[in-house]
Image (cartoon, rainbow, N blue to C red; front, top):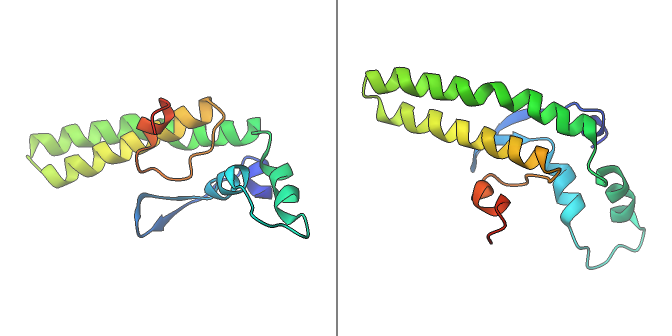
Length: 125
């Protein structure tokens, strides 16, 4: 979380998360959690790291994911010329997941799961 505060994020392969696991997820998990019990006040101390949403993290997420949107689209176009449907789907998914990262960052909201993320951002649940 301290790295995210400083604008340093990582993206790692994670089964079940086709987009990957972005280290900023930890910030969102803490920011949005509602502890049932926190006798040592650990959650509140961690929330003070995650909230308010910080500009260095916002900038890092935009810098990390913005370029990949067009890159994915361009790769999908190349795959379309070869009728490689699986590759097209992967590139489109990747680009949309990056769009979600950007939209959430611009709105200073944490993206904790890419599943339905663009739909959720519009306020639908």
